[in-house]
Length: 253
Image (cartoon, rainbow, N blue to C red; front, side, top):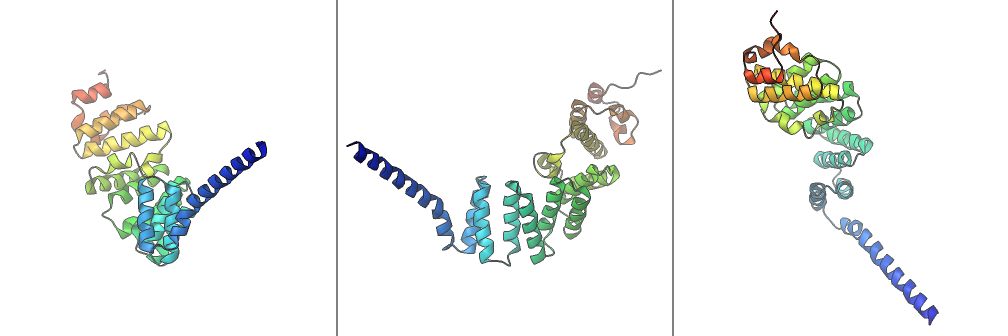
């Protein structure tokens, strides 16, 4: 009786394993019968659900069926980037750009990989190429500005950030959460970045966002806040009581 019970238990385990294995292999089996368009759609859905591993599988299968499709390789690279596979992501972004040399997004994305690797000079090179191909995309200017900023080229950063804001006043609200700007990690750099944005907002007459950035710079320990009373960019705000609350005016001698 005991032997029969053990055999039944083993049989149940084997059936469970078989079902599990079948469930795991099912997506792969179904992929072979799917068209490239259907695989791309499934990959997009997986990315939307943040299942990047599954998205990579679908998009890899799609790209094998449509090897000339630059958009597929770009999407595959994005899924790999979101899955922290930087090497594969860069390879597929390069494939996308080779299939379409004017594919600004793919070229920008090569720069994003290099930025994540802290290779800022290479990142700037690709961001510049993306800007040259599509000057109207605010994101590319923000990314190039971040690459300049990381190389201490503040004049270059200001020029790109200013252009980004001209193209899209909301560009920095989005880029603060995603994109290369979100990777500015050290408090010192975040403080300097916030002060830089405050200066740009002041020049544009956007008092609310200027003050918000100055508060952020102060929170992150920016040491030269008193410069608002010297820098011409802030001249229109110097009598503003709200500015005085953030940065007390110098004591008259």
